[in-house]
Length: 359
Image 1 (tube, rainbow, N blue to C red):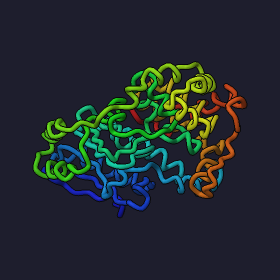
Image 2 (image 1 turned 60 degrees about the vertical axis):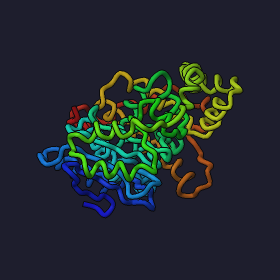
Image 3 (image 1 turned 90 degrees about the vertical axis):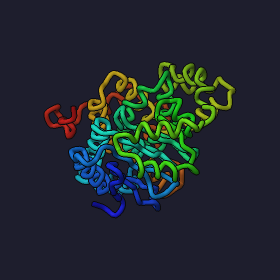
């Protein structure tokens, strides 16, 4: 498969271990293909009753896609100039869809950093699966920070968060911990990091078919503590329900609450255009099913690379590390409805869309 994706079977449970610690398990195309291949194999394997995805490092389950690869391939030319870049997003989103509708319990141990593409391989599990967080969990959809948008199904799972929580997470790109993840509905149970050894022993000793119930029972003794997002829910809904990104930021600016000011400070650093695209994306995603959300995102990612915003964001934050992205346009006032609408114009006819077969 790949050196970075390890697999084994324990008591009728297939265990996938991501093992690229120096890159916080950032997903390469080879890793996406390895994950897809093993999940397809186990889907029809009568000896596998459940799947667990975990990491060899407590620092991260997965920090996202390999953005250095995005930057390198994106400079081959407009996105169509790099077949590997096209393949990455098509195959990553197809993997997200596979996980979302997986016919067996899919259990994600979200210890450490879980961001972007890491959310895509953790959030998509079926209703019979489980998403486990620890006190080390650092969860975010921070794409607007690099000039992208919440993809990997983010248009679905963020748009279905209660109230305006999805807009808050998508537009600010800020990180949340275990208690907030549970409150938003992006996690199911909390297990302290010091008890993960017992959790792993449970995986070894419990038949796969019984594993989700056993983990829930085990986790019932633990409490993640209070949720800041729950405490600030009224503030979030009041501000992020405004009619535009500009209106949201103007509303936040009038609020001296430190929570509101922190969100405003973050948004002032983000791509103005991609915040506007993200707001529209989440509004549209709320009315779409998973497959249509992923098709919409696949369209948008092509438009983004054509525009070049993500290439500039990655340059500023990861390549040159000057932290001074030259966003295009530079201000919210310069973002027009036509610019936003351009991202949602179909790239392909329906019959030729690379994810047309998703149902």
